[in-house]
Image: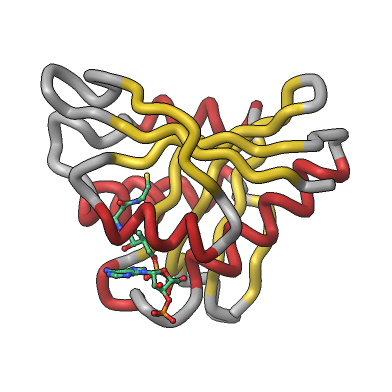
Length: 145
Ligand SMILES: CC(C)(COP(=O)(O)OP(=O)(O)OC[C@H]1O[C@@H](n2cnc3c(N)ncnc32)[C@H](O)[C@@H]1OP(=O)(O)O)[C@@H](O)C(=O)NCCC(=O)NCCS
């Protein structure tokens, strides 16, 4: 598996995976991914054949970084791909000056919180209605120093 910067040619596969991970009303639209590939740090995990297995998108702002979104294709889960993507993004964020990284995890998805906890993130606050009415998130932070 290779982890590299996402490119415009990956857009269709990214949109496909997003559609497999989230319902239509909450999935990011293609236009948003097109923008994020260009203007944020978007990484894909792929096979040598260029098949995309998962992706992570984040950005650095001042001395903090953030993870926007993280998706792994349902057929390739529990293989450590998300873990590797998080580590690769943290490396890029650190290189851009981030000393800590923030992310939001859905309260209704304890497995996601477990993934981030294992990667060293800790819960700091509850963000009510972050994903829509009644859909709360937990904001988690990790220090990169
Ligand atoms: C959450 C998600 C990104 C995890 O991807 P993954 O590649 O399967 O995760 P990893 O294999 O790197 O898992 C690392 C650790 O996280 C935890 N974990 C991951 N998925 C889990 C699950 N479904 N249930 C319980 N623990 C889980 C485990 O501790 C795992 O370690 P282990 O396999 O040695 O037990 C993936 O399930 C996904 O894309 N879900 C839909 C989109 C989503 O919810 N994204 C999250 C934030 S926006």
